[in-house]
Amino acid sequence: MVRVRVGKKRVIIGLTIVIAITIIATLGIGRIKVVNANKISSSLELGIKYLTEGKYDKAKEEFLRVTSIDNTHEEAIKLMELIDDYLKLENLYKKKEYVSALDLINKINENRYLKYIEEKVNELSVYIEEKIKIINEINNIDGQIDKLISENKYEEAISLINGYLEQDLEEEYSNKLNTLMSKVNDSKRSYDEEQKRIAIEEERKAEEERKKQEEIAKQEAENKKEESSTNSESVNLGTNEVNEGIYQLDAAEMALQVVRREHPGYGPHYFERGLVTEGEWRWAFVFLKLEDSNAASIEDSNIIGQVGYTVNAKTGEVKQEDWLVQ
Image 1: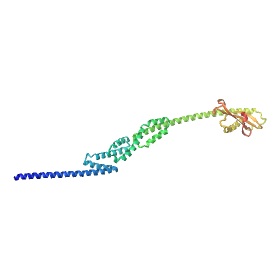
Image 2: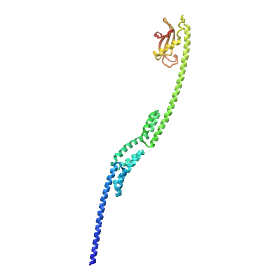
Image 3: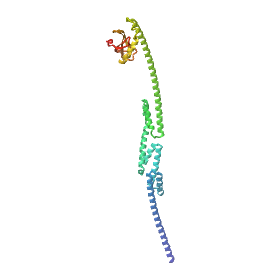
Image 4: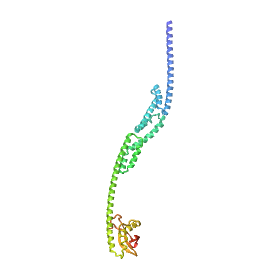
């Protein structure tokens, strides 16, 4: 009887101990969960604060503390992913890999916790999209440059390329622009050399024409001088005063100077009217205006105007005489 009672007593004590341990364990676990929840909340709050301040390493440390307590914590995992992607975005931006950066921005925009760094992401996005636009223009610039070269608009082409070279672009695009610049400069150099050759050739032809005209004028002057000498010998002046005065050829040159000043387009061609007198001896000439001002002689063009002048054979006075052309 005594043994039975002792056995029952031991069973009761054992059960009591088990129940006590269970209660203590339950209370301990509950307390641990509460402590862990507080730690998670505190680390999340501090990590988000660091994130918004741009202190990404410190923010990530806090989020790692969360996952060390709960490795399935969705918010902490997504926030660390956001930090990793943003740091990668900044690196792509610094390396000028704008196309890859734009793809990454699209991914970041899908992160539900973007709001904490949205302003920074948007700033980079605007800049990167502008660079992408420029890159697309550069990819299609070849035809535009070729057109400018074909139109000999080299300075315009150089200005266009320089405008793109001033942009902060990847080496790939800078190399393409430099290659195009070399192409433009080579074409411009060839064009300039050709223009210089043409100018030299035109100058040579002009010099040959000038010498030809000088020879013609010289020959005409000699012919006129001979004619003047013949006319002077044939005129009986009854006095030697004229022979001691101005020769006919000199008188013609004196009159021509006045004609060119007073009647542009007239001369150097003229008809000689010999000596006339109205109380004084005067050399008379009728200067001509030809339809072709570059004609070598009056036989080569039509006469479209005449003006008469006389020169005092002794004093050299030049006077317009309308009666010579009436």
